[in-house]
Image (tube, rainbow, N blue to C red; front, side, top):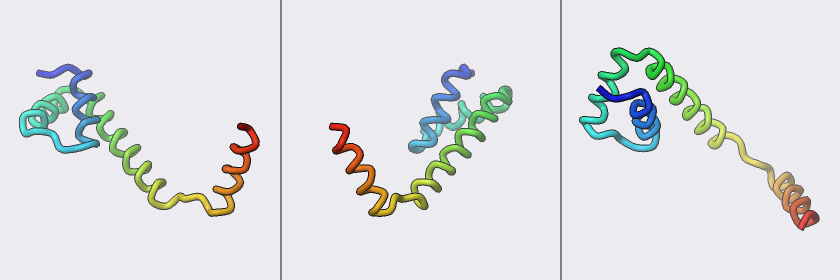
Length: 76
């Protein structure tokens, strides 16, 4: 059985790319006994989905970008 520390690592790794069959099995087995890590996976997934949504829909207007660049130029 894996530790909670290893389980949270695997959850994070799963968000970035695919887990091996063995890692997936270990994670599922751990979730069978640990409700806190199951909750962590749910929350991590939610945060990841919301972050992807924001980056897809939220962009700065050209005017806002110019304003930021001007402010940065003044401070340097």
